[in-house]
Length: 446
Image (spheres, one colour):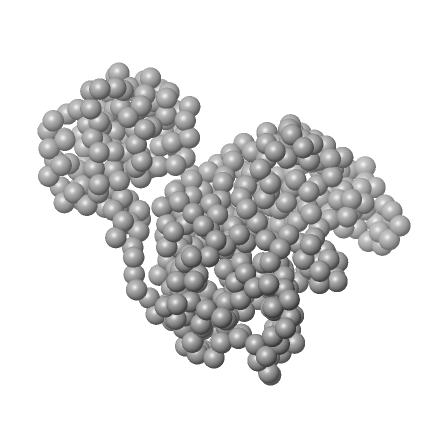
């Protein structure tokens, strides 16, 4: 069991005694502030999940230090004060600090809040069967590792704002799931979530896909078409692989983000966009800017709040937990009881997973097709040389529908190419757009 860490800055001795004597506080790994340096500097140097702060008139510099850092987005706060007006404390709360209790303090409410945070932050180690999944979940994201719990807290705080978000992370790490989770946790959740892959658009159709077109606007425009800004009206627009958008179209996207206005191709009417834009890239944004792939001014518009999705290799026990999770859901779909052997789980835990969660899911999918009841290491097909895979057709069981074999071939090739869709499409002899369509179909049916 991983115990959450609590940082405490409390100068009132009576309050400190009440907290220290409570069973709730003793559940945490506790770190208390000292007089050696300002408490905010101590907090910035600590690794903790929750901070309990007693506000006082000398804390203004501490508040500013926190506002200027990213800590407010990364951990939760419980602040107690004497109730006197404090503009800096109010600003701290507006920036997402969390709970603020004023005197006279209701200690029962404070302890209940601490207990709620403890239960939320606690990460469990469980032995699980092939029929269950016990990983924590936030929105569409699954995982109980410390980096995922930190990501959940960040998303919960930024979701309720209107800030544009740029999600960066390796291919297959789950950036679209992060975007969808942001939408579900936002005030726009009842409105549409529209996703478009900028890398799959032909340069000639980018304007039409983004802003729509009127009938007869160009050859082949047989009817009026709504662009994604119109489709996502009132909701969230997700621009996946935004760095693959041609620079000339990036200029037009920037104009919409700056003015809020757009005009469909061939139309004289100007529309006001009411969407929240969430974008994603598997490139390092600053490198993309230096290489001339991403406009710097567009980056600053998109990245009002940047979010980094951790690679699977940094998620510890989530790796084996996710393998069980995917298997449990596939077992439920097929009404089977297939299970991973200890050796297969060990192999999964040791693999580097360059294709991240997508690669792991596809590995379990392939293994499920190949195995009878016990999934062994040879069913995982990890790091299998291409010539070796081609020379052992006996591994493919008879009677498997062609659609499943096609899916396994696509997912295997994609994993071998570390998620590179262009190389995958080339090797499979299909267009990139066909590949995107098939992957989208698989995602909808999984």
